[in-house]
Length: 277
Image 1 (tube, rainbow, N blue to C red):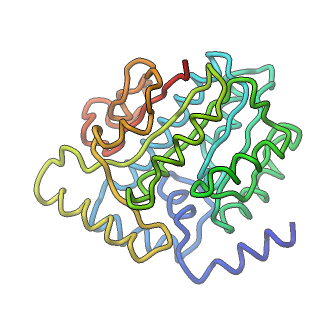
Image 2: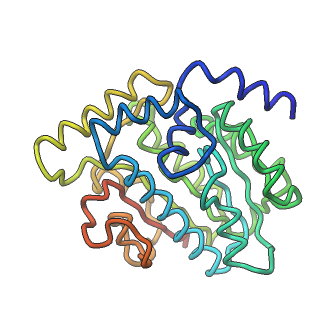
């Protein structure tokens, strides 16, 4: 635990993408340097916080549905910081039997450090664990997941890659990594994906603001790209999408709290859940 605390302390000289996200969705694990960067983005794109909350809301609804369908194993890749509406809390709420297991994986040292600190206070170490692993090194990540003993690869797994793929450019070949995981998962497994989109901006001004957002992140350790729904759909491979398909995230089984449910395309977030045959 001392190592985790040192990792947090050593990260305070620059914004952390995980902590910026935490700030935007209403979490408390963020610092002045993160909030300053977040406010810079918000001045250019005023609804950025609502876009990120939309991603988090989608995650909660998708995890709840996975649990309702009987999946009890969850792997959350690029999980960031455990915060409001994290996977293990939603899964436990959906299954009061408390029989779900969750592995969080992130390659950002500060995110892992915060995860270890927060999970120590809020989670069951027999069922919930955070590991250091990188989506870009898919084989190593999967080995580390299995090494935790939390996941039986012979049984269905809900694999969550939420608000991550927009941080990976096509030139870095995210396709082969997602395909690797799809190939390793047992039949009946579920794939939960979301990412930000530049599709259908309301105006040329918003189109430019979205381009500026991408440019801002070029100066961080998390550059990436936005994608249209047609560009994003390929990550599901030939798996069958659950209803209502690949949609703007607020259209995916909304509840009364869902942001943008009356203005779907303004959410700037795509999402879907697919099942392995």
